[in-house]
Image (tube, rainbow, N blue to C red; front, side, top):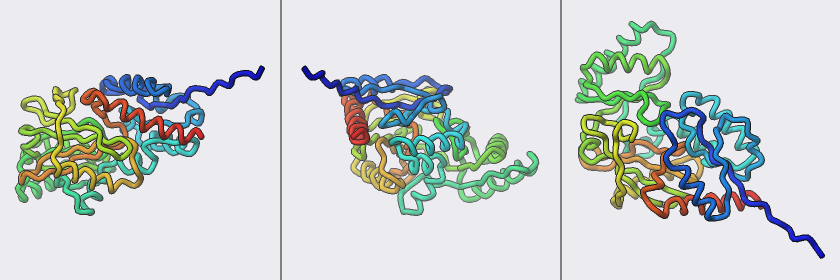
Length: 307
């Protein structure tokens, strides 16, 4: 009598970080949804001693420490993508790791938050850097930028961001300190952040899944929950949906997961605040079906890769 053949269970890797600013609040929902579809998920830190080639699919989800070691993270992504299927793809991870992609979106005619770009300036004395910062801020003030948000070009979760008056000495000091470490963005503060918050549209496999509205705590400008921000499910407007689709069409490769963060400009138009294509929180708890939708997309990719 012939022995029964047993097909091994489909197993994928879900990538996290070993050291993060806050706990991962949602991967357990994805793991459970994958299990419902007969897919086992191993949640592993990106910098651990793992043989990634043993997995048909490696899904970058919550490596929230990557920005602190970006060259090392991108080197890991390159090695991993050479031995298995990595999502999002390496080209997308590279492109999205520096907020310079916003300049590219603007060049394609996509509405983004107005941004003044300042390059890394190592090797200067603190006094020279601060004087340069004062000069840059005086020029922005002359253009009518009275309140600013200053933030590093490589970061996550508003880490390193400052909201201040253009005339506040602390603004120049912060700008100078950031330029000593890397490239910097300076943007006008948008009052709509306090009034209507930030709308985030989430996509799986290029298809819209759900949307949420994030609001900052009173007196703050940061919408993340670790600063007291709140989240609620919402329905995006047709204008917001169209803008998000235009922005995603500019990525260097198709995305398996994506979050598009939009804010309102002073004239009422939506604009891209950021594209989150590396490690976004996807707010899987905001829609009961969202984890299943994401799991189905991942199962399809893993099955195709395993054939």
